[in-house]
Every structure is written in C-alpha cells, then in structure tokens.
Image (cartoon, rainbow, N blue to C red; front, side):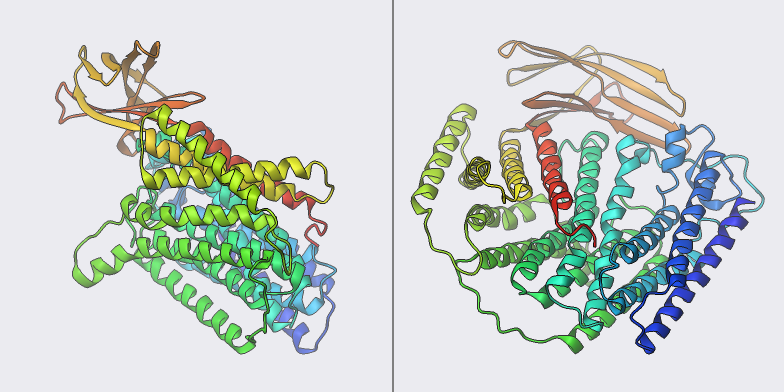
Length: 628
C-alpha cells in the first residue's frame, strides 16, 4: 500500500537526519574542517527520499487512493486532475511534507554551492538545518502524518475545499513556502556564523543570494495570493489586511530589511549582529505565521487545519527556536564602535531598516491584538484597514522620500550636491498631482501626499535610469525595483482614491441607475460542470457618456463534495480600470444582492509587483558571487 511505503520512507528519513546530525557533531568535536563524502551522500539521500515520499502522496491523490486519510479528506473522484494534484499541498499534512522537501533541498544545495566556505561554518549550518528538519519531521510523523491509513477504506472522498480549486491557488502555496521555508537556510547560517566565528563580508556573500531567492518567491507568492483573493473571494480589492495575509507579509518586511543590511555588511563590514538578528527574526516570523494559521487562533478564509494540538507542538518548537537562538546571540554578541556619517548610504539603508521594522511591528500588533483582547476580555475585536491606513500611510510618505534620496548618496560620506535637482523633481511631482486632482475631481490631503511622494520616487528613479545608461557599474536591479515600487504606491493611491462601490438589490428584468452607469439584470441560467453546478447571472452595464456597453456574468457555484456555495465575481479587466460585479441570493427570494465596483489601475498594481520581483531576479543573476 502507498501509505505503508510513505511511512517507511519518512522513518528512514528520520534515521538519516539523525545520522547527519551525529556525524556532523563528531566532525566539530575533532575539529575536522573537511566536509566528508558520506555527509554529501547522506544529504543527497535525505532529499531524494523526502521528494519520493511527496510523489507517493501525489500518486495517492491522482489515483484517488482513499486508504490514506489525507486523500479521503481532501479529494474526490470527480475532481479535475489539476485540483487532485494541488490537493496534495492544499491541506495541512501535505503542505507540511512540502515544507520538509524545501528544508532538505536548501540544506543540500547550501552544502554543495558553498564549497569555498570554511568547513566548520558549513557543518554548523548543516547541524542547525537538520535540527529544523528533525523537528518538523517528528511533527509530521506523530501529529500530522499524510500517510495515516483509514479503515474500512471509503469508496469516495470528502472533496477539496471549493475556494482552493483555482489555478492561482494551485501555485500560491508552493511559491509562498519556498519564501517561508527558504529563510530557514540563512537562519541556520546565521547561527553557524556565530558558532564558527565566521562574520563579516564573507558571511554576507554566503547568504545574500539565498536571501534574494526566498524574497523573490515570497513576493511572487504574495502576489499570486492577492490576485486569487481579488477574483475568487468577492472582496473587490488587492489587500484587506486579513490576518493570514499579514502572516505572509511580516517575514517579507524582515527579508527586505535583511537584504539591504547585507549590502552594508558586504561593502563596509558594518551591522553584522543586526544582520544576524534579521536572519533569526525572518525565520521566527515564518514559524510564528505557521503557528497562528494552523492552531485555530486566527479566523480567516485562508486558514485550514485548525487544530489546537498542532498549535501546541508548533508553539513549543517556536519557543525552542527563539530561546536557543537568543541564547547564542547574547553569548556571542559584541557591541560595535560604528562611526557612520549622517549623510551616507549606510545611514539611508539603516533608515530603510527602521521603516521596515516599524511596518513589521504595526502589522504584527494589528494581527495579534485581537487574540489577546479575546483571551483577556472574552470580547472579539477586529483590526481592519482603517487602523493600518491611519498608522502606515503617513509613514509611507516619509519612506518614499528617503527611498528617493538614499540611492543618490555615496558610501562613507557624501555632500548635498543635488539640492536644486531634488527641488525640481518635487515641483514636477506637485504639478502632476495637481493635474490628477483636476482630472479626477477629488482631493484628500493625505492621499495627495502619497501621490506626490510616489511621483517623486518615480521621477528620481527615472533620472537614475537615464544617467545610468552612460555608466557601466549601474545597479539596474535597484533602479527597476525602486521605480516599480514608486509606481506600485502611485497606482494603489489612485485606486484607493478613485474606486467606487455600490451595493443594491435587483431581481431579473430590473435596472439600477448608478451615477452615469445603468446596471440591468437581464436573466439567470443554470449550467452543469464536472464537479459543480453554477447559477450564472447575465448583467448589462451601460454608460452613454463613456460609450460603455458590456456584459458581466457573475456565478453562484454549488458544490456537492463538500456541500458548499461559492460566489464568483465577474471582472472585465482593462488597461485603465476594472469593472467588477458579484451577486448573492437574498434568503431564497427573487432578489439578489449585487455589488458593482469600478477599480482604477488594478492591472498596473499587479504589473508593478511583477517588476519589483524582476528587479530582484536581475540582482540575483548579476551578483558576482552566485551562491558560492
């Protein structure tokens, strides 16, 4: 049976992991600096076995082997093949197995691609990484085993959660896990660096590409989840400060701060222990997010496998990671006598880090505050967009200004030479904002400050791009990412300011006048699909002033396995705006609740994030030290 084979492989993997830890510790004891051939072989065997176990689980899902409880609970014979496959990681047990694959692969690849590094540094990294592997492997074996058998064997499965049956969500978890779990390798390397006394520039070079890799996957994973939520959940936006969204954003802030700090450590040999703290913090936040999502503490449409027993294990393991890493940090910590000029690139990078940590703390407090409030007062409190917008948006204005100024400064010490140029850029930004206000006929002091500061960053980055074409040593990755980030904030500001949303009730044959738009509910029809039925509405949207005439077809989907209703938005995406419409029935009456929205520049928000991540890829491929 597949379940027996899967369990045998997992137990073999546990023995191999223990062997790697034991052999590596013996190497450290005898101060042997050579990573022996058997360690390489064991690491390769470890990765191969865990990947094999995952493919066994995939086969179980594809063949609908309901003898495994994970397949029974998350699949169905009528599911399309893509959702049978994605169901492998669309549950707690399967996703945890994916975690172990990434932990093992990164461990092996770090060992292989860092052959030029000192042996004791690589061995310590291997020990720490394998302790993490062992911790999650025990969790998998004794609490969340995907190969647990069920008897008698059911004839049919319960089916995959319908909201997970989507192409974007099929790729969203693997991307996010590569970001989340990928941070483990520089957590392990940071601990190893302290234990092996391997600080400074060489340490920065050994982890910088690994940080970029995890940051890139985290960015793209968040993007895929955001796009999925936009068209699948019927919220009509790109971000709603949902607790699970926040859990993915927290390590992204730490990763971004970490990469910028690595630039200083590599160039100036400064901020070593701050880099160590960020390495530790990033992975701790990833495990914290996992604890919050899988313990049942957070309520969200994204959560699954809410099991307090699982939460307790992760909490204990998280506590072990925090206490042990903090103990080593305090034992090795040394205060540095840093003399940094206030007008230098180092200072601006440090300021960038302060902003990132401020955002991180704000989002963390907003996420966990309702948990403590409910425990202490037994009252549920929700922290939503108004809190984050009030706290974060004013700070973003300052952040964008510093992002514009920082790249123009030099290392060690600089003089203000671009004062008049910056005044011209600021004046241009204010003028463009004035025309935006006139065109859209809307004014808000704070939102206009956001637009002005984002334009300031865009113009500054464009100027850098033009002047960089004349130089050979230009950091194009930074220019691309900063320029794209400026556009991202600009489009978010325009989208927030000039979107509109109307809720109303209609029945078939009725019309609704909204400003210059007319929404006509023409008819309904029932359609049958392989694993669900859909009630499809036909709506006609007219706007005589804008010569607009389009049809939108929102759906109410009816799933049998499991028995669920989902509401599918109908979206007409354009270059400048999206039209967005959802419908839901009102208490089985003839009336339907309709949500009609106009969302400016949605497409360009996604494009901006793609270009930001592209900047990271450019940096990765242009690095002189490629994971070596």
